[in-house]
Structures are given as C-alpha cells and as structure tokens.
Length: 290
Image (tube, rainbow, N blue to C red; front, side, top):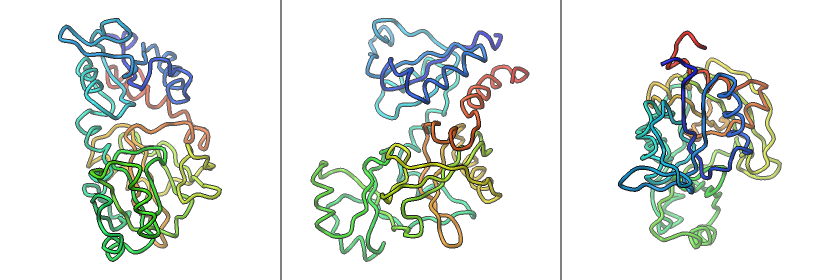
C-alpha cells in the first residue's frame, strides 16, 4: 500500500470537533501529508452485532487510529478496526490511570512525591501523618486540572468527597510547595523531546493551560531527555505529554498524559508538533515518505 492511501480515525468525544485546536491541527497536517484522517466521536457511535456504526454509517477497517478519548469500550472496539493504534491500546488504557503511573514509572532523573491510594473515607490525620499537610488529592483518570484539589484539613476533605460517590478512589500525594502554580510540560515522541514549556498560573496551585495558565518555552536539558527516554522505554507510548514539578534539586514526577493537547506546546515552542505526529505515523507505513 502506498502512503497516500493511508486512512485513519481520530477518536474523540463528538464528530463535530474539527474546530477544537488539537483536532484541527492534526486534520490539517494529515491532509498535507496525503493522509485521510476522520474524526469519530464516541457519542455518535454505537456497536452492534453486525458492526460499529458512526452517525448511522458502518465504519470500515482503516490503517490506523489516533486515540483521544479515555473511557469505555466503544473506543476499544474502534481500535479493533485499525492495523496500528496510537497510542497502543493496552498501554493507553493502563497509563490513563494516575496510580498506575506513580507506582510503575521510575527514572534516576526525577523524584516521586510520597503517595497513598485510598478513598476519602481515610481519616485526614492518617493521610497527613504520612504525606504532610496540605495534601494533593487527584482523581485517578482526571484531566485538564479537574478533580485535583489541595486539601488543608478534614473539613476540606469532607467537602471535596461530598461531590463524588463514597467508593471513588483518590491518589493522595505529598504537596511540592516549591512548584506552587507552575510546572513543566514536555512533549515526547517515542522518547525524543519535541518541545518543552513552563506553565504558570496567576493564582492557582494547578498550572493547567485549560485553567488559564500562561506558557513560555523552556530549555530542553539532558535531564529532560533522560526522563523522556526512560518513560518511553517503560511504556512504549508513542506520543506523550510528561509533566514535572519543580523541586529544589531535582524535578518531581507529576503525571503523564496519554492524550495530550498540543495548543500550549505549539504556541510556546513555535514547533509544528502536529506535523511531527502525523509524519511519525506516516513513516511507520512508508519509512521513505517522511
């Protein structure tokens, strides 16, 4: 098959997301490379015994899938139509979970905050005896700063928990005060750092672009390159956002994002990350094409 024949699905929440920055950029760059990339929205899709249907149309097998949706079995079913999936589905499904990230990923180039996995029924004093106070509470599959709280006392823990089912599990982590309101994000493509930025919040301990944080380019150091390589070697994830907190001597691991948006990193670095993603995929099918 020639590379110009490549067809793929970009799995998202809805079909009509071509205006969202990351979707738009991937569609643009795929088109420039002669790739036929189509958005398939999970909320517009159904699986039946006779096949998978999107907006009433039966989905045909394709060469590749780009995963940009986290939850449920429909995305897994769509992945089954593709020759290759990005990121690979088993690793994608595993590393969506923040607990799996902190317990599995290691590097000599970063430290890890102390952590506890548990429900909000744990006594606050028991949590802080291990982690110190305040403590960071993270939902295990949250993104864009949602379900991340800085908890100072038992009443704040109870208030946080009231918005969720009592069975919900949380990742409680040591608070890294030296990184309040700022962190670093770099984009890794198969263990190579494509770009790096610092994110700064005006008044929130979280530094998510989705919450209004500003971005600026950050130098790519040997330390950052080592972390990208180490995490790729351990996960096999092709396209990855890696977040670190600023420590006094070494950075602290924050989390990895298996479906990172590219708006902030493209704007901060001036680099065409969408082109690198699509070119990497195209090169898998035709090594001489890109």
